[in-house]
Length: 180
Image (cartoon, rainbow, N blue to C red):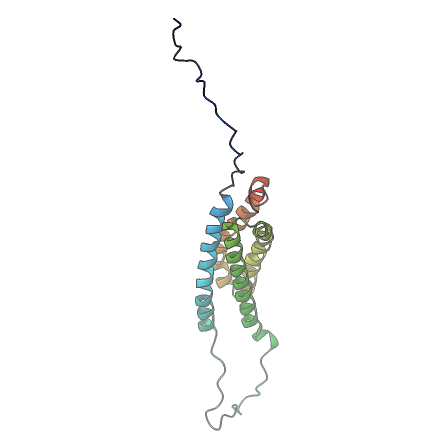
């Protein structure tokens, strides 16, 4: 009688091999997509408050005489120089640029969470454009009011790493390959 070897391989029919597992997706698009949605939401919440504060900080307009709504007669009133209106225009342009960038980041964040290929390409473009907008906003604010512009420096320095981080990750082949 032959002794049974407990360490021998079993004589079992395994059947057909299981289908190969699909490629494992990188979690980077999902994580950065959630961060993009959060950051864009914070921007979208803060933009109306910034616009309201900016309008409160503007000097009051020159009042006309209360009698018959005529302008005062005692001075040689000349129209204000063209540059007096430019800070308001600059502020409006900056707010619209930040609003557009925030909405773009929100849309890209949703696409990143859903692993869309267009979101990966759009994120690379946004990551190149966004630092330019941040630096332009700071420079224009410094030109308008040096104290207010320099107060944007910490915010700009704090926000610049995120577009750089997006650019680094969304140019990696594995991350781009995980989108469909």
